[in-house]
Image (cartoon, rainbow, N blue to C red):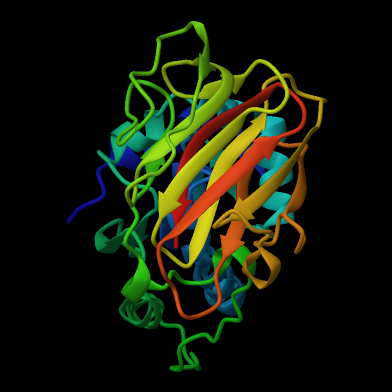
Length: 322
C-alpha cells in the first residue's frame, strides 16, 4: 500500500503540535514512521499505549519516528489544554498532532481508534493494526523496516511492558459487556423509559435490570452525546459482566468538582474498586476524562454497578469495559 503525498502532507493541517514543533513531509522523508490515531478517553487506545511508548523509546536512536494523531471523539477532547494534560499524565512524550477537524483522519481514510500505520523509508504503508493486539508482529515489522534502511545491531527481542491501571489488557475471556454511549443518539438498553431529548426530567430506576441494561434516577437532561445531572443525588445504575468498568465523564462547567460514591451489588466495592475510587467507593470528578471505577477480583460475575453523585453538574458520556 502506498502512502500518497496528500496523506503525509495532511500533517500540515494539524491544529497544533504537542511535544514537538510541526513535522513536515520534507522532514519525514526517508524515515520509518509509526502514526497512531488516538483520542485520549478511548480505552482501546489506552491499552495499546504501553507498547507504543516502549517502541518509541527502544527505537528512537535507530531512526523510528512515532507520531500520535489526536482526533477527538467527544467535544471536550478538542480542548488542547485537556489533551496536553492527558498526554502528560499518560507519559506520552512523542510528537502529537492535534487533528480537531479530522483532516489527517480523512486523508488516511481512517475509521478506528486506535489505528497504527507503519510507513517505510520509501513512503509505503507496510503494515497496519486496527484496534488492540498484534503487538509482536507489529514490532517485528518495525525491526524489519529499520534494517532495510541499513540500521544494524537491533535487539530482536520484543519489548516487555508492565501495564498498570487502565492500561492493563482487558480480561477478554470475561468481557461480556460492550461500550455504551449515554446520549440519546447512540445509547442502547436504557431500561427506565425513553430518554427525553434536551429536557429536564426526573427518572426512576427500575427495581431490577438484565445484564447490559442501564437506568437513571434523579433529575437529568439527556443530550445528543451525553447526560447532565441537574440536582444532587442523581444515580446511574448499570448491570454489567466484565472485570473492569470505566465511565467517561467530567464537570459540565470546567473548574468545578463533583463528589460521588460507587456501590457494586449494593455494597461498598472493597477490593473491587478501580484506581479512581477508594475501597469505600468514594471519588471526585475534577477533569473530563475516563475514570476507572471497578476492577473485580476473580471470579468475575455479572454485577450491578451504581454511582451516586453528591453534587450536581456531572456530564457523563459513555461506559467502557475490560
